[in-house]
Length: 231
Image (tube, rainbow, N blue to C red; front, side, top):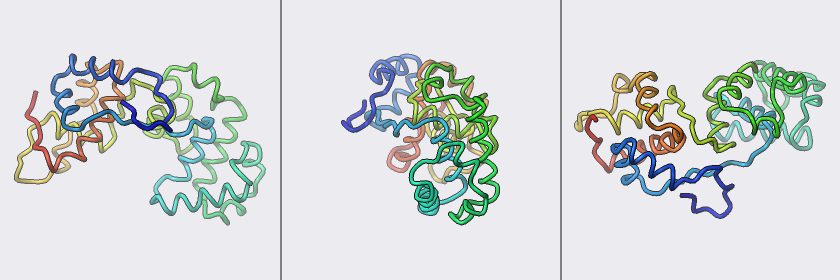
């Protein structure tokens, strides 16, 4: 349940989701008890173009460095650029803001695909199913499924997203559903394959985003609570 009055309201009922998931997967319900209240907070909801532009700028950079470059770009344009303004800007001006050559190509491809309609508008994307959003947005250079899945969860509040390749999700799954020896740290070979996460996740539909959030939190509570046994 959201307790931050400043947060945007989720487009689904968290209490209904938690009750449903407890019934479908009692071991997941045990994780709910260990972690506590559901606390997903939705980020601001800009257009898909603005969201993906920010994602591109933040790729493969630490938070501070990425935030600095993002701020420089916004200062250069006097705010968030329009797709056409981005296309019209010489590459060297963007490099002057600290943007790498590959990211400039990705940004301009994003702008071009926004103009030609490949990247949907803010109004249009709200009406699209998740799979169609992933298919459309991953046509943009440098945008993979994981980036779109994060947009679906944190920007749009879609209830049924399970990023099976995400390291934190796989680690949380191992800590929750697999028997890991207490005397050693979790190793790479302990992590489940994405298809394993996907298979169990079928029972969590249509609230896989809620399960995802709790799997991330499982990593936070792992040191104070022993891992659960195998179901």
